[in-house]
Image (cartoon, rainbow, N blue to C red; front, side, top):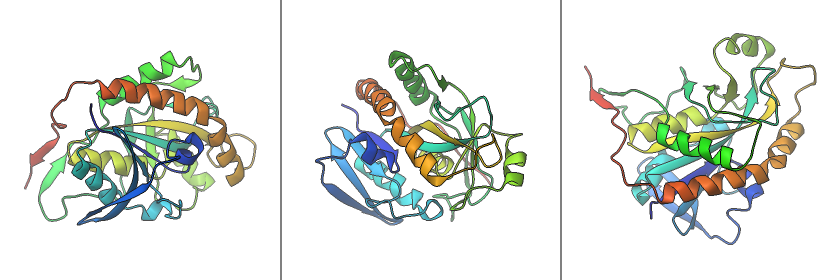
Length: 249
């Protein structure tokens, strides 16, 4: 069976997927990474085992390099995001089809003139969408643009007014994971949990506890979708790495 990775934050504990699994460490030239292994699935807590690493200090290169070293080919990211659109309410799940990340870009190619064309895996996206449909989850979107900000603070109202013209949701980690995975030829897509309206969208004030509560409330639905997607990816035929690299000057 294929080796599949699921990268998540606090939601991994809420899903109960790492219960009974012992943490293991992989060391790479980019740093070390702690993960939990269950059969053909690697669960990787992006913020560390104790959820103590803030988003702007997550070592995405170490995380993705570790998965590559383990032989992972498919990656599902589970990301908590804020909505930039009133129509995308905090009970929604979303599978982004593109992203914007124009700043603080992490790359494996700091010493070479190599460029990639960034993007998300259409195969993993297709499987996530079909898994959503089979799970009878009605509040979801098959497309959307994810905008990554640096964090760790949330965005100002003025920043949100600017960003809402270009994207649908905002987060702090997914784009970095997608870019690093593409550079190493791994197939990555994300299931985003809409857990709040962004600052200034809607009338209610933005509270951290509400964001956490909304995410926990969708844990059962997210687990159902992830389990179906893992089953599909486990039987998917082996395919070559993402054809993304070209030499530049």
